[in-house]
Amino acid sequence: MKALLDNVVAQADQVILGKERTLRLALACLIARGHLLIEDLPGLGKTLLAHVLAATLGLKFNRIQFTSDLLPADILGVSVYERANGAFKFHPGPIFAQVILADEVNRATPKTQSALLEAMEEHQVTLEGETRVLPEPFFVIATQNPTRLIGTFPLPESQLDRFMMRIEMGYPDAHAERALLKGRDRRELIAALTPSLTSAQLLEIQQAVQGVHVSDALLDYVQALLEFSRAAPDYQNGLSPRAGLALVHCAQAWALMEGRSAVLPEDVQTVLPGVVGHRLQWVSEQAGRAASSAAHLLRAVAIP
Image 1 (cartoon, one colour):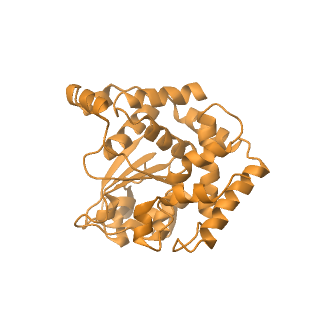
Image 2: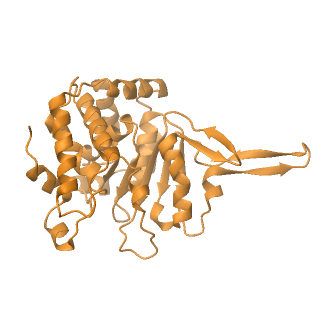
Image 3: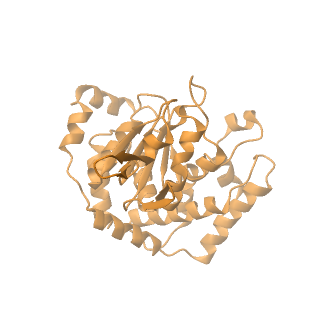
């Protein structure tokens, strides 16, 4: 399985240059059955990452451009009366795909943002009293601009907590940027990508992630991280049990990608910033500027 996943990363790395670690974190989130939030400035490749993952994994992909006038029905679908049949027919919305790109999700109103909640948590949507199951695997990649930009509606904590990980793209290094400037158009490169996995293989890998061994000692470490976040006066709120599960599952996925059958503390430390960064809010803005919440946690909690 490691070879298959390495091939996915290698293909994606041909399009998104110089971001191998970011690609690996995004892939770990997917095989851990989570959803991914990418927050960064416009033009750094957030949308491109979603396109590349869908293309390399051979999954059905839909993009939803979130705007202030977008309605929940525009995402979930709507029933339309057909006179010829004398009945209503449901027309599924773009949410019925395997990879959903919720582009600039924080430009939509909270009512529209909430349309994603049931889909992300339960992989189903309930409309007009009927529950409709979404395809498997189901993966939401949401991008958002920093909240300081004009025209944004901050995601509520309940929505943020549905995302297993939040990552940032960041600027490319000089070498990668030069190759980007000299290279072909990214859309042409995406069109040339061939799927590295089938849906069946991806589901098998997701199942294998759950079989990666997690020792009691490692669970002690995870619980110590959770407990410190709840007891420390530095944070507005501590990490939830859902955050603890996300941390364990992401660490299992990272271990599998590294070719190991058991999770090490280093795996937890690697995925921790992506898992807790959007869940922990500093009480003091000055403290937040001095250090990230993940770095603070790692320094404060020793490995048992």
